[in-house]
Image 1: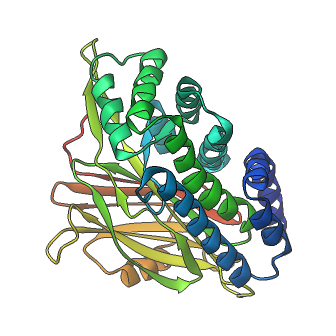
Image 2: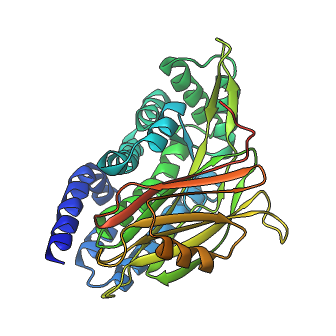
Length: 349
């Protein structure tokens, strides 16, 4: 057990160092909440502060734009970043996932649309309003094929979103106020961070979740369809969207975090197909390791239990034309970082 806890400590230190710039931005943006999070003595207290922080950040965004941001944010992946997320493993994948959060945090003080678009390009994903994404992809359909063209499309999207102000407010609400506190202040043995990538022509809508151990702390309500964009060179570029699901062990618990959750393919109705995803990060790797599992049309409870019984680093399932695959970055370590991809065969590029 000592060696397992030592590895946990070392991995935590590495992630804390990686996220230090984002944490500094958080401290400057929300000084009171930061001070209280540092002083908090329990998970219950930290969760209450984070819930209050989310409400405050969302209210500020609503005051500026008149609308609510989605619960966990929807991110549009550059094609190259999708390749990276689906081919990497181990510490490389963990670093990519946390660096995306870190990089987006820097947008907090930016007021120039081009600078914001460049920073999102460097992060490998764009966080935008619905109107912004529509304008971005409409512009991209004209000419895309280069970093300059993608950045210019991003600028068009920022303009359609109402300018730099609303986009910066969205980043502050979703990334700085929601993801940074989870990854930095709530980092501990047995936590979960899952990227769910929509590679289909329909929206993936959140259905429900089940907790065997631990607790879910955040999720994206609706993950938009992938967008296929013809380029001037005749090649089609696909911008897939991702949502984020996070969870952690309960305060003082002697077991880790074991969750199951479901998304509906299209509208969430009684007859719609449900993709179920399970993931677990045990407190120690005595009986099981970090693991993942996926299947279709089973309950969140069943997939949560199945991920433990299979104890697998990767899993795939099919239901008609639908596919679901998930890969966990590492079997050992304090957290289960994973990337799931749901496809329906309509996106071939």
